[in-house]
Image (cartoon, rainbow, N blue to C red):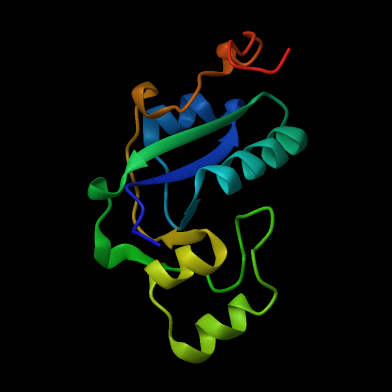
Length: 133
């Protein structure tokens, strides 16, 4: 699997103003688009608001602050029940974590803007032009 070009972070629109003002504080959980969307939906169901997902180019992260997500925290589910054991036993890298669980931990803070939103909350009710009819 090629390395990711983006990492995704899902949350609720309730947190949007504070995230835009203060950034996403570490440790934070980042993953593939699917897991970020799942987590955004979970957070929106708990906090209220709409699910939102930030898509951030990998080059904006300090690689020394990326770590394996060896316990499945911050994601709706992990791909393999044995992932934590594999990562803990082998001292896995963040890239291996991404391949196995679809997620990583970022220990730094990251400032984001509205341009990093995959879809703005107000777009959620727009009909999908590519949806099956």
